[in-house]
Image 1 (tube, one colour):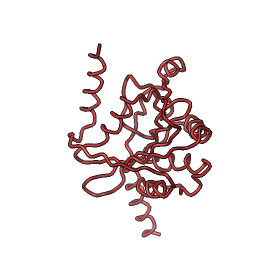
Image 2 (tube, one colour):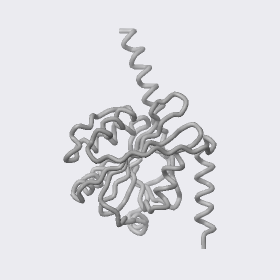
Image 3 (tube, one colour):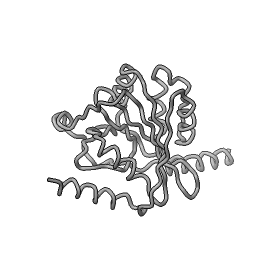
Length: 209
């Protein structure tokens, strides 16, 4: 029993290290704010899985998914990259313009982490189903980024092979086996503190004419 307890403790520490604590104190945006910020991207219906990988240990650190359906959002359970100009409700980030999408990926890529970006085109119906599941999910607890994301993906037609998992790299591997997935890796050398990049980006928005 003691051995099993130790295994559970180690597993719990690994899981909790995998995702940030989130922004639990940030209140949900109002329906009016979300509506005004909503953005519809003219590209194909698609799902984009982000996996953040520790450059030192090779361990998976965080999971999120961008959904391009009737609007484009990022489901970012227990995430820590938040912008004042991007409304949030229940771990769903709204108003994901190309500029915001680019910043979101780059904010996670820094000297200590890189980002694996896996994109797959889907039917509008599948994208809309993913969007509705994300909206209905609600906020995730710290350490539950991958299990929350995989739980949504595995409910989609064509994604039944996705296993429900707490581990970002396992979800990344399952997603990568789907036909038609396009994979890129993003490496950058920014300092480890994401808040610096966030502040710089928000300042650029504030000073833009």
